[in-house]
Image (tube, rainbow, N blue to C red; front, side, top):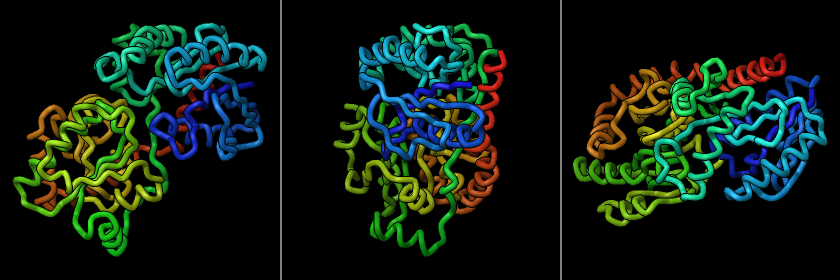
Length: 375
């Protein structure tokens, strides 16, 4: 079979959640299925490291699709020409976009449809594009994959799509994430916080990640505990919000917050493994990969009690109301003060995270592809 894949989000040193899903699944699928030909379609010059095996042929087509008008051109003009030229049997798009201008079998991955619930979190051109085209993509798709049961129900209800046409394929976690020795933890704290304990947040700094309330909650935590604990924020700003800027400026303890920017998995493992807890409290998530990464590192998790996060975290996290600063702060105080609670969550986390791996993700994803190819 000739399988074309939208790989425009495979960007060296800039992989986010969708990029990691694309990378980890296609790395395994292409190597495990040499009987098929794969065509990776990029919208810009690509890194050779993304060409995983000899049965992968890279193709670069313009324009670079990073704006709604260019989304439309790339998917409705450029992609159909390539698929026709390749005589492709299947088009896989891991980023939620499809081409409406081709009759080739298509598999789309919707990681979430948060733009249906919180449209004001997006620039008006982007949200209008998503809200108009995504329902059309859902109906156009020969098969839909999503990353949680929560998102499956959400897609079904929002777009009136049959559950039979949606497969759940959970995300995984990089094998690099593992616990650190006490000696390693001490070294990390000396490097980043002058030896002090810290909470950690990991994620792009977009509105739904709820960083403004996390900053408010940390300020309240500091006021109540009088501790030396710091907060480390890991992630590249995406569209850093006015609320977040305002929350930071108004903080009493802003000098106790450390912004690291984007980090490699190796660097991130060191921070995860040395933290008191992960404070990951978005108000909307299709999955929430940092939850699993932290659990693999033996780090307790504080996360939200909404959308997919209870499904992913199971009984191995301390849950909060993401819309309540007091709820988040109380959880930070509780986990900071109670070593038995931390140890219990760590043990449960090791069990919970075994449910998720990129090997399992790739295997389930391939099952969906095979099912579609057999139709």
